[in-house]
Length: 309
Image (cartoon, rainbow, N blue to C red; front, side, top):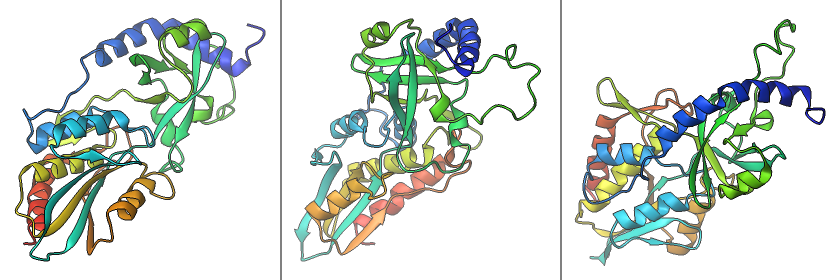
C-alpha cells in the first residue's frame, strides 16, 4: 500500500468492498448477445433502440459500421470508415445531394493499466459539452471493448470512511483523469488476459429505456434515433430524382469533422447537403431523451426530401 497515493487508496478501499456486487451486476447487463441489426424489427422504433444499445466512441466506430453494412443492402465503407449508399443514378439530369447522420459519441479509451489491475481513462473527441460531463462515470457500470469482446467494469468511488472529517470541498472534482475502472483483475497481466489493451474503447454501459409517451432515453439517443430514421428511409426505396448519397459518418466529434469531409471529397461536389437530426432533452447526459414519434416523422421527411417533394 505504500506505493499508492492517498487518493488511489481511498478509491480502492471503496471499490474493493463493492466491486464484487457491482461487476456482477454489470456482467448481467452486458453479457447478453451483442445487438444485431437485421431485416426483422426494422421499424424506426426498433432500430432506434438497437442502435442506442451500441457504442461508437469517436474514431472507434467500426463495430456499429459493420452492423450498418449488414443492415443496408448496397452500402459500402470508405477509406475513413464512413458507411455510404448511393440511391438513384443521376437520372433526368437531377441534382446530386447528400444526407448524413453522425454515428459517433463522446467516450473514453484505456489510458493505462496499473500494476494492480485497474484501468485509467482518457476522453476521446472534442472537449466535453459541459464542465461536469465526466461525473456521469463516477460509481457507474461501464463496458470495456477488448479484443475478445466486451468486458464489464465499474468506476471506483472514494471511500466515505477514509474521507470522513475532511473539510467540505477539499477534494478535487471528479474527472476522467482521476477515474479508476475495476474489471475484477488484480494485476496488469490479468487485465491483458481479458483482451484489454491501451486505447480500448470504454463507455457507460448502454441500457436504453423507453418511457412516457414513446420517449427513448440513452446516451447519444438523439443521434441514434436520427440514424435509425435515415436507415428506415433508405430502406423504403424512395423514387429518387437525380442522385442521393446517404452517409453514416464517423469522427464527427473531432475538430475537423473528418468523416463528413471525406464523403464530400470522395463523392462531391453536392448541390445540397442535409443532416439527419432530432431535438433532444437532457442533451449529452446518460439519460438524453428523444421522441420516437419525432424519429418516425423524420423518416417520412427524409423520404420526401430524397424524392424531391
